[in-house]
Image (cartoon, rainbow over all chains, first blue to last red; front, side, top):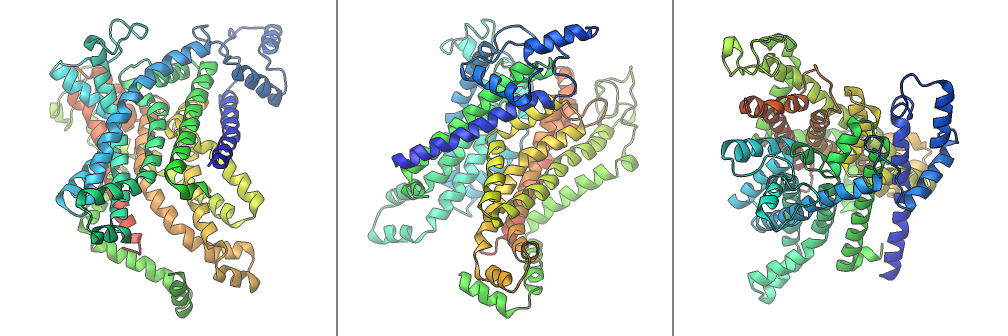
Length: 318
Length: 296
């Protein structure tokens, strides 16, 4: 097991480095000179040269990457072009807000999705299976940004029971989960964000449970005389590893893919920050946010792999 | 199981098992009325988008200052007008062309590039495999929405950049699937036999590996179409895909959202179009997968 853990961690390092290369190259994907945004349009050739030197853009690109990486490793992502604030501060504040959405959406979608999928997989072909499968297809086909708008139309405009957007009057800094006047701002974004993972997890749990249920050992368990409850427990345990992998992936998507939902609800999280950075062509913030989010995704995948190996000894031997 | 399969393959002439397989897939599809229904709906959506210039009642770009955000039926506009007084139905029809293009093109590109790279990666030696698969792993390490947004965000909006970024998002997973399928058959006896009889690597790939890779790759590609439509509309919704005044479902959703309080119905319509298309493609893909699964 220890060997597997070490190998898996060593394997994540080159991936993380590759991710950092991609994030760094985003500057060069952008059309035009990366300095365009910081220089006035009438800058003289001399000023351009000075600024270019100050930002280190006159060095070879691999050297620029290494310098950037060195700073990033020390937690220095540079300063935002739009606000002049430290990128690390902007990103960590936004990440906290995104994490809050994900931490509520994850148990909701994992619990509901797994329960729906397990019931459907236990009764394949029955009416309940059709119902769950249909609901799951709707969940994965819904554009969640549209669902957000519809929920706003219903609950904020028609019934006026929940707020339409933002984090409330106290704002991001003073937001408290224990005050309903603040916490109610979470309800619609969390519901919207949870919809796709519910569908995906219900689908994969159904497939896993239905498959394990048909295996020979289940017949054996019944032949030994185990009750249905005990058989179900065995089936669920054996269906867990693939479902767990999907859940891990979905948690990564909840954190890294919340940009659409955050934009709909103007929730001041990392996706919203990313959207702002794109509009302002604020490359340091763009790089910092994407690097942070994708590294979280890499770390999540690592944790899921280790958890899976802990549950299923066969994986360790690969 | 593999022995009987090889035996069966040896007994039948080389071209016909393939044709027989696809014929049986279509036969199974023909016996599945629900999937056929969704196929008809998908066909209708595609045809409506293609025939937009013929059936659209108004010019989708024609604005009207006095006719903004009018309800359905106002002066012959079947679904009313948008925030600039343009006919909503015409814009939905024309929007379908761009939305479908942005949904289908990335899947096609990713299938071609990812499928080919994966097939080669699974079949080739260790070095080529490592080079291809480790590069793919890096792009696989990004959440898909994030990668699409990052690339389109850095390169700027537009249909071309949107298609490019989505293609890049779908390529790694496609490559992995093709690689697995191709590596599975690499050491089977019939491949060794082909090699021993002097077939070149390209010939073996084309005649003996491709058939085994095609099934899983096509099944995965069919399931990607609805994801791609959702992501592409999402990009346009964020202002990173299709640019105004072009009609596109995601972009319409984002501009009509501003008038949410005045005209909730108009704001819901483009979303219904995206949702319907995405659901139908999803169910169609499920049906195709069931039909292509020989075990069932």
